[in-house]
Length: 531
Image (cartoon, rainbow, N blue to C red; front, side):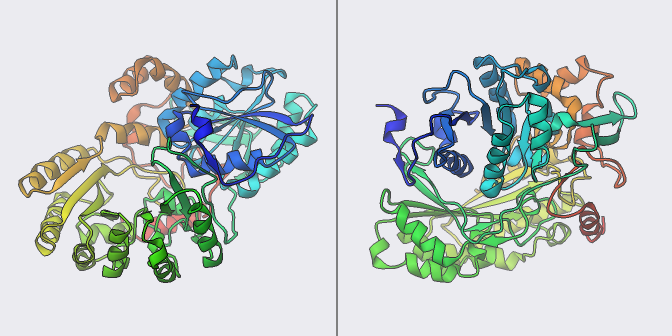
């Protein structure tokens, strides 16, 4: 049985018109991963409900019947290292990897998603068109603008599309450098008809996303996802999920409850999504609704929750709905560090959350933190150990897991100017040693992966040849170091992108791409830390 025949759709695809635009919409990973992406589902269903387009899906392991001559090829880009799969899929379709090599007979290659919205520059050469921000209005505006120049030559199409808010055409901007391996000198449009800045698009409606397909082949089997909130009001200084998606928006209860009811017609597994789900202003009412006896058969899971919203009632509701654990981001056990990053949280609140989770019947608590946060020292790591031991003593029998990564600077946040702390690796190993003796499960994220992540998140167009080299070497830190050695003199060294603290007045690779907050505001937030 085909995986596509096992899908239960929650929307009605329309029959395409005779002259519909043939589109391939790809996710650069396996079907089970791609179909679990809510963003991918929403864009695909939006296209499938337009009669003026004829959309076919493509994954790395499976595809629908693909058009012979697609006019548009789109990618949903959610994870940095999936760029390797994007290049492989382009090759499988006989499409040149670089936009500048594509003539009029090739499709326009477009992309969107969190990776490209954060910093598209290292991948700019691979895309003709990049959609920055929320897709709700942006996708339709892009398709409508393309229809106006559908029969024109490629350059005319690109210049026309550049006029659409949120549509970024990388080839229409020239980046100059002080030296081949020096700082960026300028980023300018190639002509006066191209806007100097591209503004990320923000959807401001009060009906957020919900799954358009449910399938047993999803990574989370048969899950129906409902987006409860978008962005996060906490605004931790390092957090891309908050800063890049501002302002904090909540789905109205009038839209949430019908969305959940719709999902329950095809599955009994509901996932409530958002960076801070329990901070929805009417979350208590939503919880009361889901606590009704008619929902006793429902399996409910929540994304990460705000610590001081973990009540015994919340834990009881989740335990009854087949949830065994809660996930909380605490970042550090040090009050000093949490103050630096704007994490408005006390250790007592974290301990109380654990007590409430256990009292409500949950079996485990997953905490997430970081090492190498700007301003952190070894004493702060000791504080994290102490906090975790205190939690264990306060809620005996509750299984405690601590996941820890290294701080990674992200664009459009106040901490984008900081580099990765080289002491982070040592501090993670110290945590592992200390927590093991306390019987606390420790799940570290690879420090080397943090280095690669930071490299991609802070780099510019000069990284493109390096990405193409490492594709053949493999995605290890050693591969990247080898590629830097080969390309020496053509781009700055690894240390510049990953570990250096940057000057506040230097031109950033994404300077011409505007996020929700202006640079001056990010600098103000940075200075408030006192670092």
